Length: 328
Image (tube, rainbow, N blue to C red):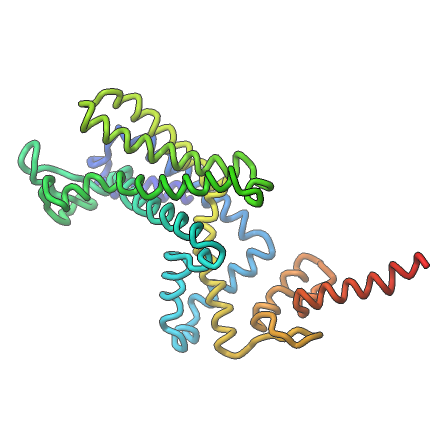
């Protein structure tokens, strides 16, 4: 259904394919497969009891009028800090945060340019033959006119180059870290951890080489580079739902969960450990966790009411009293 809706949007948005560029057909087909894969994987993901419960609680908090009335700025602030600037990564490492920001904003910029162009939603037409005056149209409606020789024109036609310049250092840092850092390399898998980074670098480098070929080599090797670039992009789009890139789709759902925990703290519904009385998390979150454990038929959901330290102490005490004494 999602793939069908996307195809319909492509046909209508390109004015019955009048603005659709047939040279970009492989990219458009890849986005249809991407839509199918994301919808399928997302459905499987939220079918699990734990994810389904968190998903419902997140959306309930997101559309709660009471939450909006008490904290109207909470949602925009979380979208900016949690999704946009990902401040939680800065607590782990400033270098990882900076590299992730480069990849994130580079990919966002590339997606905002590539997808509408691929679907025929964006068109650039010249009213004076070869230029330099151009018009940008969205769904056939003129949005603005610009001179291709101006700064705005340069940014318009080199937006993907800017995205590539952002992505390459970020992806290279993570690739280097996975090669050198023992903690990162111990549990990594080639297809899951390294292929996404290599794919981003290949896409970015071949995209820059296309620009280099057209400007400095008068089109030398352009056809080969265009096929290589297209193949890498198509592969990556199809790979997204079934690899590490799927967290891009999962991350927005986590905003609702963060809002759910935030509103619980605002109500002073902080749950204290049953043993040491140190705060664990919000009361609704602990109850939600217990509900998930009951859905999974786990008979030790009461352990969710203890902090990690007390869990270790209680397990050690149980071992000493029930297991070790048997060896006396």
